[in-house]
Image 1 (cartoon, rainbow, N blue to C red):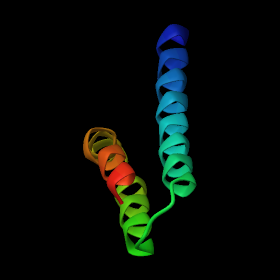
Image 2: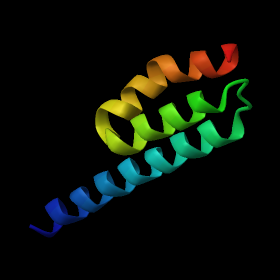
Image 3: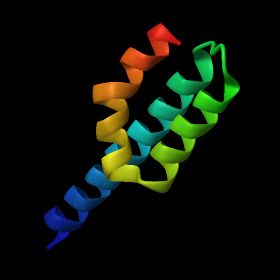
Image 4: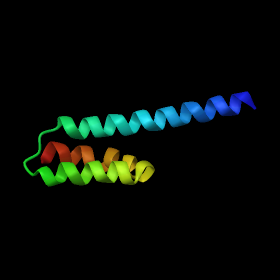
Length: 66
């Protein structure tokens, strides 16, 4: 039982760390249009699981083009 609780804590910690990493990554990149920064931040925060996946697959490419 204790191993399951520790495993859940580790998963939650990794999930929170990945959200913090994504928001930090969004904040560091310069944008020509500030609305893109706001949109990506909202996607990552409002849709934590799917938003992280979409940001990792599509958002980082858009950051370099923006």
